[in-house]
Amino acid sequence: MHHIQAASFVSPRIVPGWADAEDVVAGFTPREGVHYIALWFNANGLNRALVFRNKLTVSGSIALTASEAFTKKNLHRSHAENVEAMKKQTALHLENNVEVRRIGVMAAFGCNYQGDIAPAHVVSTLEDGLAIAEEAGADIKYFSLADTMGRATPMRIERVLGDVRSRWPEMAISLHLHDTRGLAVANAHAGLKMGVTQFDSTVGGLGGCPFAGQPKAAGNICTEELVLLCEEMSIDTGVDLDALIEVGRMAEEIVGHQLPSELIHAGSLDAFRRRAEAQLRARSQPLGYFKARREVGPGRQAAGTRPAAASISRICRAAVARSASSRHDATSSSSACARSPRNRNGFSKNLRATSSGFCPSSTQSGICLPRRLGRM
Image 1 (tube, helix red, strand yellow):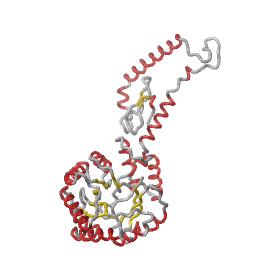
Image 2: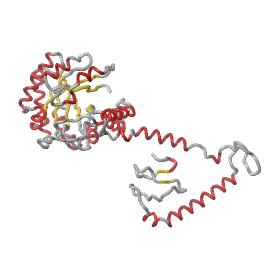
Image 3: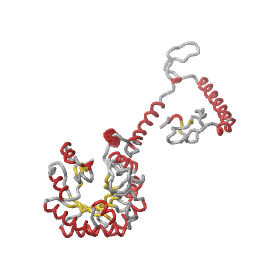
């Protein structure tokens, strides 16, 4: 990870969880090559961040909202008042040699207080941001579109991104996704297909907005689940996913309750693949019957040799006979299996491995696998 938001310099009265933001920033040792940033919304927050300029990469943004209702709920001002506030804040940033590179639009995909947000209104909000930047002389490098309420769907992602891209085809876009309704990964997939390469995410699904009108909602898209999605799409992130999952488990221990991430509980796919490959290698070793014999005597094979052709022939005939018997047993017992107790995947609890080499797989997948592959 090369970009980490370390703290939020916001009002401790409104967001008491960040009352110790200074202690958090003072308490970590920065790692070379990693950009640590912070969040703030006013001059007081900027001044608090500037104290840690030796640790933080202090850069500003023009923060607007596509929903008038949410602007009032979150910032206690109208859209017009927020535009004026952003003009002053942008000028203040530049006076303090703080670069302003981003325009962020909250509630870009819908609002719990105002309803659906038209893509054209998102475009209009971005135009307001660009006007602020032009007036102040700021050089905007990218747009950030936030699904603050978790109302986005893949179709809405495509519609909004399509309209923004049509208006500004060369502008980079990042996505800030919430997993309120379990669609964050699907929305990220839609964004990736449309060329988005930057996403805001949190370990274990921490975070969220306390003013979104969605109590007990999940937080931001989980970093580890986003990395898994990229890996399965053959997109190299440079992230050690298994190590990241361990960080998520550590975060869960620290907060003392279960986090939204499914991956920190299930583990990565690669971990299961490695386990399955190890089991396959172990089971592909020669059978004990064909190993060297320790004794040599009447009717026994010499050490290091295999059974005679006649012995192998007898073994094969016996195997065929057992296979035929098993098929007969399976056919005659089919009605009994249909009446027998079932597990949660619909398999009969009475099923056992047969000589054909197949057996019910793990109850997680409900797929029959050859016994030689083992359960995954």
